[in-house]
Each structure stands twice: as structure tokens, then as C-alpha cells.
Length: 70
Image: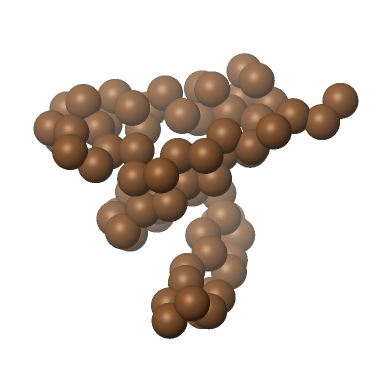
């Protein structure tokens, strides 16, 4: 059964740090329990480094890097 990806466009934007942290802690739980891929777009590299399993970077409308975290 195919499951759609869950888009998360700047999921911590305009949130205080505690609420943003709570949201980011929920995303892996959602991903694991529903077996969904989460596609997160963020300008906050720290969030990507902490929570993403794969990080793709885009600059000037081009893919500039794409790597899996180990």
C-alpha cells in the first residue's frame, strides 16, 4: 500500500522554542507510526541536522547536495 508523503513546510516557523521542539519531536513519531515519509523544508540547518535522515540542499534553484545521515 502506498502512503503519501507528509509535507512540513517550515514546521517551527513563528513558534516559540519550546513549542517548536515539541513539534519536531512529534514528526518522527508520526513517521514511524504511520510509515510515512516526511518532507521538511526549512532554513534552519540545525533542525535538519538533528532530525532528518536525509538532507538535500537547494541553492539558486539547483540541488547542491544530497546526503543520507549515518
